[in-house]
Length: 227
Ligand SMILES: Nc1ncnc2c1ncn2[C@@H]1O[C@H](COP(=O)(O)OP(=O)(O)OP(=O)(O)O)[C@@H](O)[C@H]1O
Image (cartoon, rainbow, N blue to C red; front, side, top):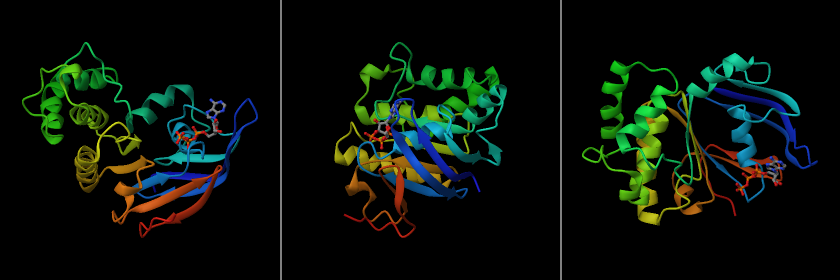
């Protein structure tokens, strides 16, 4: 078991109840779509997993460690085990493709030799060989998201969280990004992808968790899309 939520609720300081008694388990190796309308609580669920927010009630475990009881000095280890891909890429514009990936490794304390071998490896994996020295501004949206994915997997995370990763991309490019995420999942990384894109989820035959007003309204392993 990689992620466990037990009766988790989150009430923000302004009184908004973003999550209401959520329980869920994620096995190692799963690929999960997280769906639900705007405000349903998807981002809150993600923030709790990476301990950017703490729950108001309930327990959360990631890789058997309690995220709630975790000491401050254990948070970097948690975050190293989780790679995150953002809708708006969040690349460093004044760094090249290779430097963006290398930087993500440097900040978690990887040594120079490790960085030298791993950076070309992940760049190749995401299909950007030959673009190492390009800057983000010289790349298409799809290519920029590939850099975002390369950076997220550079430290070999147990879990990859993609928050609306295709939100800024056209359908063809989105499908290419999906193939890349499936490929990463096949190689063993657990993937949780929050999305509104029904056309990507439909026929994917992956587990879909629907949130509705802070509750899980369905959790379907067959990958059936409900209206
Ligand atoms: N930091 C915060 N402080 C107060 N309320 C918040 C905060 N973050 C989120 N909320 C509220 O919590 C609820 C759930 O928001 P959340 O961002 O988790 O939804 P979401 O499903 O990710 O939405 P979207 O699809 O638009 O990203 C919303 O009502 C939102 O306004």
